[in-house]
Length: 411
Image (cartoon, rainbow, N blue to C red; front, side, top):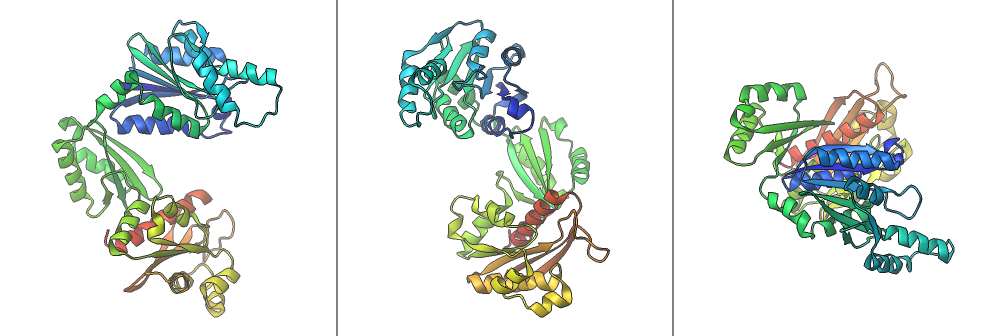
């Protein structure tokens, strides 16, 4: 089965708001084995949306999913556009109107009753023959069958989009497409310590296309994300070949991120972790706490950006800071040891560095980062020389730090 996405919103098109909905729906479909063949981002113009939906349907896909443009204002036009693209009229759905009015009772009234009711009627007006999805906020979604395909219309706010998509999956016309693909989802691998050019050399040697496999690769800071489809014995053999080409580099075969792998390793040991961060500013802690259940193995961390906090919160010696500087192996080691001792943990990871764009010198250039990992057997410090802008250096630092911790944990 094949799907196309139409993301609406001038704010998304102009880059003022990052698209979360298209990525969410695409990931959901891909995990179910549905191939997403195109994503189109358009503004709020009626003709632009009609064209995007019409072109998606004309491409022969089984499913078109739109996001955004379902509110009460003049520029919320997606329902109207879908009706035009599918050659349908627009009708007021009384059941949908009742649902919208019920939802509005929990929204503070900042407009007149007349204006609110006009907005409610607009949101409850859907393409003729639609299956209305209950509103997560105040705007209902819809499922519109059309010439053997299905159009799903979802609201724009991400939490509403997520809830409406879950509701859409319960509609038989959508479930027949999505759930009917069970077992076709690609295998998701994560690799560390491998650059994309090396990976492609190995892929050419293994020649997965000759075996009927489709292999995708996405380079992320410090990692490669690899998809292999279709799953099965041939895909497993290809993955084994990658493992032989890059021993120890595959750290996940189920799509889990390094923070999830670290969490599983700590939980299996019944041990606990603390963090001490300078240049990453809490990024490692944020990644760890994004894992559900992380409170079982992550106790917390210290963002010790200044020397004063390194001394007060982590017990780093002022003499050490004076003699070696904040960005140094001895200070990284002291930060890690202080985190373990002050927070009472079995393990800690510490990062200190120069993320730029300023602050670098000839002796200590931008991109110089020290990572320390402390565990029951002692402390290991790694010196890194990273390239890129500030955000890339910070992200790569956090990723490498988590991988050093993973390796120390035996994962």
